[in-house]
Every structure is written in C-alpha cells, then in structure tokens.
Image (cartoon, rainbow, N blue to C red; front, side, top):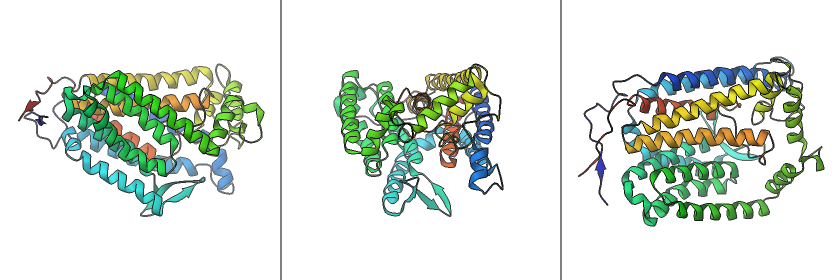
Length: 386
C-alpha cells in the first residue's frame, strides 16, 4: 500500500487564503443563540428549585460560560489548517482511549451513570472527545487506504479495528447511546470512504444482534423499550417521562403557548432542560417554531455536506462529512426520542441541551468544518505517491 502526502504550497500554520463559509457560520451562531434562549426558559423552574428559589439562571450561566469557551475554540480551530489534525490524529485517538479507561477507575457517577471525570474541578465527559477522535482516526485511515477501502482487509478490518478501540471502553462503561451513535457515524464514513455496501450490511446485522443481546441482559434498557412501545402501561414510572413529553408537544398546538409559558417545565417533565428540551420548544413555540428550528438544523447539515463535497482533499472531505454526520445523527435521534419514534437513548440535542462538555466540543467541531470551508473555492489537491 502506497503512502500519500498532501501536495500544496500553503503554510500549515493557518487556515488558508479564503474566508470561512458565512452561511455555515451564520447557521451555527443562530442555533447557538436560540439554544441558549430556550435553555433559559426550560431550566428556569428547575434552577429555582435546585437553588432553594434563590436564582433562576443557574444552568444558563454555566451553559453560557461553556458557550464562550466553545466559541473561542471554534474561532481558534477555524484558523488551524486541517493538516495539523491529520498529523496528530493518532495522538488524539490514544488520548481519548486513555481518558475512557480512566473513567472506569476514577470516574464520577452522575444520575447513576459513571461517565465523567473531574479535571481541575471541572466535570468532563471523555465520550465527547472520543466521538471526535474516532471521526479523526477514520478520516485519516480513509486517506491512507484511498481506493483500497473497497477491500475487506482495509474497508472492514482496518476501519473496524480503529472503531473497536473506542467502542470497547464505552461498552465497559455501559454507554449504549454513545456506542449506537458512533456506530452509525462510522457506517456513513466507511460508506463515503468506499467500503462495499455488502460489508456494511453484514456489520449492521452484527450491531443489531449486539443491541438485542444488550437490551436482553440490561434490565433498564429493556424498560426503555417497554416504555417506548406502550408508555401508558406504566404512566407513573417507566412511561412517565415520555408521556409528559407528549403532553408538552400536544399542548403547544400550532403556534405554542408563548415563550416562557410552558407548564411542563415546572418539574412535570424530567430533564426538561437536557435531553427533552425540544418538548419545551414545541410547547412554547408550537409546531411552527419547532419546524423552524428543525429547518435550521437541516440547512446546517446540508451546508456541512456541501463543504465536505467541496473540500480540497480526501482527508478534509471525510473529516467534514464525519463531523456533519455526527451532528445529523445526534439531532435526528434526539427528535425521534422526544416524539417517541424511538426508545430513550440519552442523546442530547446539539446547541440546545444542557451540557458544557458537549456544547464546547460541538462548537470546536464546527470550527474545524469552518477551517475546511476556507478552501471551498480551491482546486483539489493532488495527493501523490512517494
């Protein structure tokens, strides 16, 4: 197998001669602002309750701080040439695996899940870094394999080995939602890279078998499926959350109750500021507002794929497509869970759900796509063998 190098005269220390894509940047900032505004409304009652009715902006202030950090990362990453990510891909990959393993030893439990570690007093969820590390590793392998990705040796065993390096520690953490999310993103990236569809179908069948066994062995996962199929069968326990979510969506009607006028956020709907924040969006803004936000996400995702298609080299293309797919899958899964089209997965809505690590990482990833967009008008780089 041949080694290939980037053939370009640009200095790798900066992002290139063109400006970032203004459409993509505008969509990201718009969703970020809307997300913070809706988080303020959705979390106000919970914040007052948790603070002994002393403040209503506890969660908003923390999220806003992480948003500022994320914006700083987005600006910085938009200035860094993508070749530096290519150079340090495996360093980031190994670091992510080490952090995932560290969680098993010194992790902190939050809401019954041991998936966080504390660094300098700040809680950090390594799985967020692991998602990016996996995408980075697969993008690098895609460039190395090139056309050989169609072969089983590279397209399945090569990509699969890198994927398992991340998924095995997550399985030890019993982090099923992250496993499903990364698996779906990996399948899309492998397909774009050239892995044959029949191999992907075989992998999907194996993944389906794993999920079935996991649900059978893990009681709480089975309860989620039962609640999804018939939430009214246990309205005070396993079906409670989804029923309250559906009540919120239904009571919003076409135009909503009005901003800040949700009733379900007053401690009726659990995690109303996190995984189920979109139910509050529907209740306050109605079908019209909810469809508007979905349209913004759709435009951002389409623009991300457009940037990937117009990237100057294979690594940039696969990296941008992978990051965009991660955003798309997270968004689709969250919306499907909130509307009870899928069982609860614990996957947050990007830019909206409360979670500082996720928000900062999401914005940093958007910065990388913006960096790739700087070369959207450049001719594709000739990647020559050496």
